[in-house]
Structure formats: C-alpha cells, structure tokens
Image (cartoon, rainbow, N blue to C red):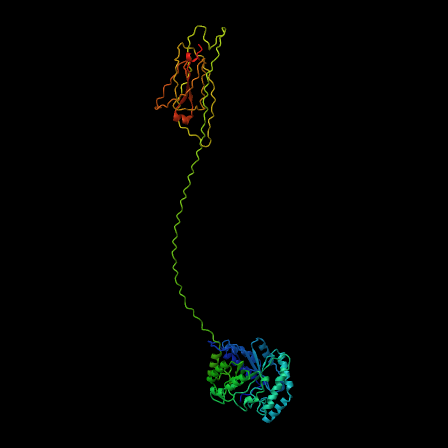
Amino acid sequence: MPRPRRRLASTCIGTVTAGLLATGAALAAPEEQSSHSDIAMGAYLDYGPPGVARIPFLSNWLGGKEIRVGHTYLPGDQWAGIEGNVSFLDDWAQWRRQRTDRLFVLNVPMQERNEDRVPDRQVAQLIRAGAEGQYDRHFRKLAERLVALGVPDTVIVLGWEMNGVTYTHRCGPDPENWKAYWKRIVNTMRSVPGQKFKFDFTPNRGTDAIGWTKCYPGDDVVDIVGMDSYDQGPGRTFDDQISQPYGLQQHVDFARAHGKEISYPEWGLFRNGDNPEYVRRMLQWIEKQKPLYHTITDYCPHGVWQCKQNPASTKVFREALTPQRPDPVIPTPIVPTPVIPTPVVPTPVIPTPQVPTPEIPTPVVTPPVVLPSPEIPSPVAPSPVEPSPAEPSPLVPSPVAPSPVEPSPVAPSPVEPTPSPVVPSPEIPVEPSPAVPSPVVPSPVEPSPLVPSPEVSPVVPEVPVSPTPSASPSPVVPKPSPEVPSPVPSPVVPKPDPEPSQPPKPTTPPVNSTEWCVPINFGEWLSKLVGKQSVCIKVDWGKETGFWPF
C-alpha cells in the first residue's frame, strides 16, 4: 500500500532530534487507568537507538503499561544493511536480553534498493536470481549476526507487504519464484547453529496488487501469519476492513486454517485522518483475536503519541491501553461500639477471723506424795533393872516404897498455822521429802501416886492426815509395861475449827498421860485448807494390862 518512504540513518538525524524534543512535551503523569489484556504490545518509535530510548517514556505515558515488543527495520538500500551490518542492532539486542518475556521484531527486506521503485520486469529478474540461490550468503550472515548478538529467537518479518506495489521484494511480478525465493531464505537462516527464529508472513490488508494468499510460501516455512492494516481503503468503515476480500476476517480464518499464530506488526491512522473510531475498533479487534503481538506505527500521520495531529485518536488509544487500577478503596469508617465496661464489683473478702486456738496449759500435776505411814513403835517391855545402891537410876524410884504411878506421855499441843494460800511453782515442782522422825526420849517424870484409869477409849480421827515432811514428830517412847497387849493406835485428827478467829485453847495432856499426839504438817497451802492436824496414840498403862511394872 502507499505509505511514507523509510529513510536511512544518515537522513533521519534531524527527525530523531525533533522527536526527542517532542517526547518531553508528550510525557505526562499516568492518568486513571483502564483495563486491557496482557497481549505483547509495542510501537515503532525509531529504527535506531532513539527508538530504544523512547520505550520507557511511552510506557510511562500509558500509566506503566509494559512495552514488551521492540520493533525496527533493516535498511534495504544495500546488501550490507540486509546482512545486519548496522550498529543499532546492538542496542536492540541489549534491550531484548534484559527480560525473557520481550520480543524483538525485525523487518528484513528481500532485495537491495528495496524502495527505489524498480519496475516489475526488473523485479521479476531479481526474484528469479534469489530463487536460484544467488543471495543466500547475505541471509546467512544476517542469521549469524543475530545469533552472535544473543537474539536467536528474533521474529523475522521477511518481505513484508509483498502483495503491494511499493517494495522491490514484491510478489506480483513472479509469485511462484517469489515463494521459492522465500523458502531459500528461511532454510538458509535456519541452517545457522543456535538459531530459533520465527518467520512472520505479513501481507497488506486487502487485495492491493495481488491477493496475498497467492504468495503464501507454505506452512513449513511460515510460523506466523501477520497483517499490516492502516486506516485506508478499500472500505471506509472498520466493518469494511473486516469483511473485504483479503481483509481482517479472512486473515484470521486463513491463519487458523493453517494452524498459525497471527500478528499485527504495523497498524495506525492514515487516509482518514484523526479517526478515534478506527483506533477504538482496532484495539477491540486485537483484544478479541489475541494475536502473538501488535505494534502501532507511531510517527505522523499514523501515530498517537509522538504525532500530535491526532488528539482524539490519542485519547482513545491511551485510555484503552493504560492498565486499569482499582479505585482507591475508601474504608468505611468503623465506628467502634463503645464497650461499656461491666463494673467489676469486687467480692468483699471477709477475712476469716483467726480464732487463736486457746493454749490450755497442761497442768503440771504434782504426783501425790505418798507419805509413809507413821511407824508407831511397838511398846517393848523393858527388862527390870535393879538399881545399883551406889548410883541411883533416874528411871527407878528410890527404895522408899513408891506408889505405882502410871506415866502418861506428854503429847505436844498442836500449833494451828495461819492458813495462807501457797501457789506451787508450775515450773519446778517441789517434791517434799519426808523427814525421818527422830525419836524423842522423854525426860524422866516423877511417878504420880495416882493410878490411871485402866480403860482408855481411843479417839478415832475423822480425816486421816498424812504427816507433812516439814514437821518432824518426836515420838515419845513409852515405858514398857509387861503383859499389856498393844492396842491398835488410831491417829487423832482434830476437826477444823469453824471459827478460826478464836483459836482453840491448847489442852495440856496430864503428866503420865496414856495419849500422845503428834502434829502433822501438810504444807502452807494445804494446811490452810484442812487446818492443823495431829496424830494421837493412846496407850493403856493400867495394872491389868501387864505393862505396869510396879
């Protein structure tokens, strides 16, 4: 199809400079983004280093859209350019190697002087020369160059728009030899070790000079069926572009019939000017058909970013391809439910009164002192001793005829102690030790002439009282009386005086009395309770008893 002539690097320096200046004005901050599929997308921005440098700016203009396709052309004026002997391939190869998901698309002419308007007769001769293998070496060098640059998987758009009238590599003058020539080029490049090239058969949309299906070289040498589709005739509407012979629909159907992927290496505005409807419909068509890749030709009059004469189409293109980001989620203010704290009423801790366990002192029980029973001496009948005349005995009366007198033992009068309570020490129990009574020898008494009554009634004490060890009773040894049996002594315990304020008058036993009373000491505290006690012994000294010696 008719289109602007591509210029060599030496003639495009001014254009590149102007494009770079325009780029700065065109860049803007990303706007609100819309959704689009992740089909590999690119744009022809320039054939050399400026084209590589503009890719990130285009991406920024599209709100961060990833530009995954780098697209350029080899110059077709000389065979040296077709062999890849150009420096800008290094820049594109470096860009491609930076990410594995990128595609490097390279348009390769099939003839030198490719845009010199060579007539059909001469084109037919060139085609036949190529089919005979005269140009195989040029394409072998190109394959080796690409493999050496590290881009062995380059997509080769070989002899693009072969159904038109523009290029020297067109198919119309000799379709059969053209197909043979295509096969020689593909087989030659595939013979280079390390290559992974994909060959893209890309006609121009529509019939043009020849129906493009007549130029199809065969499935064995074609990997992708592409189509260049600009906004121009035949057809005025986009629907016409779809349905026309050799149009968009026939392209898709043909590729599907041959099991090939599709592509759109070139598309953009042209004859119909700023046509946003075309841009919108073309992008929708691409989204529906899911091609391997597509690249818009972005220079005037075709472009939408670097070319400023198509503002309406530019707006549609940008809105459609800018990735849609979700609107910022305005969080619904969460009104916290006031948590009314439940008043924690502390359970009153009533302290358990600690009732001290009463310590009942263990009473120190003083073991009762068993007082020994007073040994009452049995009266022993003394042997009669004859007094010597020279020394009178104090116990024997003088030779004068004495009257027999019954001696009565002198009983000491009991002394009533003043009762005063004595508290025994709980720590050191005082155990009274029984005092051994020392015998008291009665002094000799003058025998009384009185004869005692032979009968003596013993006094029975009411309360037997053990003698306290503190008092040492002195028993009076009675004079033995022969033939008098020992009466059973009964201790005499005096009754406590009910009126302690009037102490009893002591009764002095008569001389030579037959009754002896010994006081018993119970200690201060017990004596205050029971009063003074004494033990009395009564002995019958009568003549009838046999104890009276006289």
